[in-house]
Every structure is written in C-alpha cells, then in structure tokens.
Amino acid sequence: MNRPNILFIMSDDHASQAISSYSGRINQTPNIDRIANEGARLDNCFCTNSICTPSRAVILTGKYSHLNGVKTLFDEFDGRQLHVAKLLQQSGYQTSIIGKWHLGHGGNSDPTGFDYWCVLPGQGGIS
Image 1 (cartoon, one colour):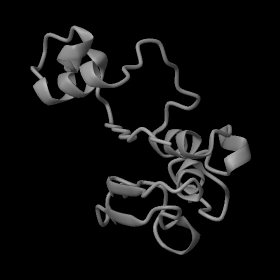
Image 2: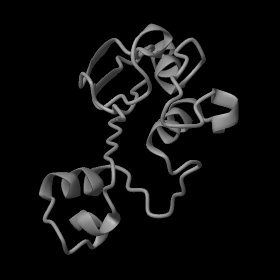
Image 3: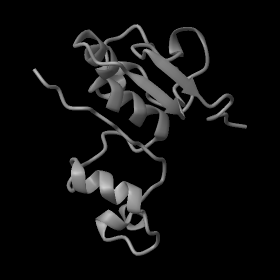
Image 4: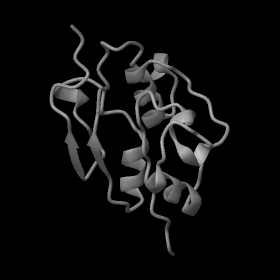
C-alpha cells in the first residue's frame, strides 16, 4: 500500500496575508505556493489555544490544554503521552522535527516519537 508523504509546516505569527498562496500581498512565497498547489491547503481552520506553547501541545495530542497538561507558556509537555508523531511511527512512518520545539526544556519535555529531532537551543525562554 502506498502511503502519502506528510509534511507539516508550522510557523509562528504567520498570518495568511504573508503567504501568497492565500492571496497574500505582503510576500511572494513561491516554494510554499508550490507545496500548497501540489498538496493540501487549509482554508478554514481554527486553533484551540492561541498561545504558542499550549497550541503546539494541542496540535501534537489532539487534546484540549487542560487534558494534555500544557496550559501556559511555562508548562512543560509530558512526552510520555500519546501524540501524532508516535502514532505515525507506529504506522511505519519516519518522523522528524526540526526547528522550534518550545514545549519545555529537558526531562519528559524533550521530543518523543521522532526518529530525528534537532530543535533550536534556548528558544522560547521568557525573561
């Protein structure tokens, strides 16, 4: 059985006006436009939590913030819980995350369910 490749791109503070495939006029984004044309584009979606760290945890787990344990910027994600990367791994996909993790630092908050991960050190700190 042929399975589709999955590429999930998440960027912070990237309004639709900043991406030309969404009729944005601020930037020209030909590479993102090509991905949108050849794949799936989300035209009507909503966020469960608009705060960065809790939103990332919701996307990973599919659970509301009070259920996945990440309600604020200061909460750490407990990587022992089931999430989409682990489910994809169990289905035979190779998984990776590159860039911003912003779900805590160390211990149970390190990325789990990823065959490869390389996250920015020290990002997400609040002073």
